[in-house]
Structures are given as C-alpha cells and as structure tokens.
View (spheres, one colour):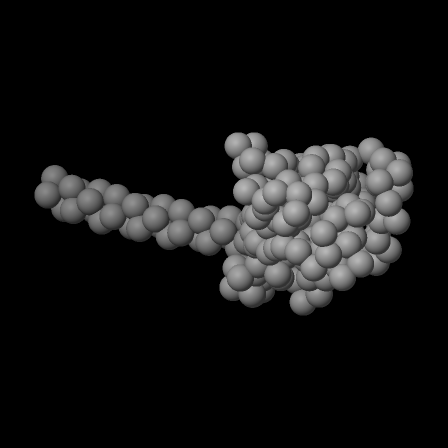
Length: 203
C-alpha cells in the first residue's frame, strides 16, 4: 500500500506542477498582450539628422527647419512598429563652416534661432521679430568652433497630441533662423537636429 500511495503522490505532484506551469504561461501571455496592445504603453525614441545653412542671393538667412522626424533615416523602420507618435522635445546644434574666413570672404553678423511651437510656414522678418520668442539663442554667423551653439526645447505634453505615424509631418512646430547683411550665396554653417518622440500602439 505504501508504494501505491507514493506513486499517487508523485503523480499528483506532477499534475500540480504542470498545472502551475500552464497557469504561469497563460498569465505571462496575458500580461504581454496587455502591455504591448495597451495604447498607453510608450517608448521614447530620438531621431537625428544633419544639414547645412546657406545664405540667399540677397544676403539673408531666413530658414525654417521643420521638426518632421521622417527626415531621419531611422524613421521608416521604427514607425512601421507603432501606430501613433507625438513630439515631446528637440535640440539643434550648430557648426561653423566659415571659422577660418576673413571679412573679404564672408561677413559676420548676429544670427538668431528661435523655437516656434505653433507655426512652420512663416519665416522670421528680422532680429527684433526673433526676440519676441521666449525660446531663442543668438550668436555670430562666424565662430571658432571651440563652442557649439545649441537650443534645446520641450514641447508641452498637454499640446502634444498623438497622431498617426502615417503622417509624420502633422506637427506645426519648427526652429526658425534669421541673419541679415551676410555674404550672399555662402555656406555659413551646418547643424544637427534631434527630435524626441514618444511612440505607442504597435501594429
């Protein structure tokens, strides 16, 4: 009788262990499905790209830099994994291409870079116009590259609604620059732009 009882206990123990393992797998699966399908589950991703800034034929720099993350080469691969995104921050670093220039090559004038939270269509009309924006930096169009001017901003989350990854150009915000009286048609500087995005709802 004792061996038979031991056999039954071992069988019951095995069945109990199997049931526990199966329950654990079911819970783990449910949790993973809840996490990855929950629209509030988010990741934060930084997208980066670079470009250059050249003055116009009229000797003005009045660029608008759209904070569209699809400009980055990484966007398509990441956006394919998520349904929605929103912009929560950005930064721009400038690098001088005329640090060895003399006045006869390229003239140096003040330049202003501002963050516009609501518009990416209307260029700055001048330095006084740029000073009306609370988030701005000012520097010379020519510097020695021992320092790198940077403007870093955060976009208020209450105004940063999630939009579909199929339309990465949805946000109206931008960086805007202005410098007047610069040498015409001259490559003055380059920049690296980073945008911080929250992404959710994988497909």
